[in-house]
Image 1 (cartoon, rainbow, N blue to C red):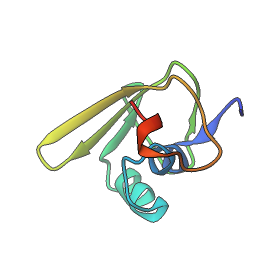
Image 2 (cartoon, rainbow, N blue to C red):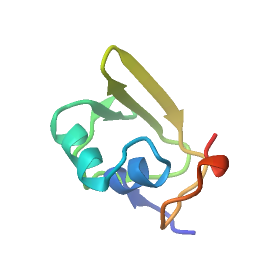
Image 3 (spheres, rainbow, N blue to C red):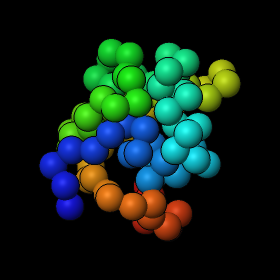
Length: 78
């Protein structure tokens, strides 16, 4: 495990977006916040951070419990 990861890579790794490019576009479009502040694609995520991602009229809020280097299976994401 690593100590930090890019927010676009993390969003893709935990299956919030289909591609990393989609995750980066969401960040650039202002639809992703990290600890209450707008997140650029290269913003670093650490354990304990709160990530908010807006999808349509919904806001999905996650607390980062772990960092991963690669995309994980859907059963491992909670």
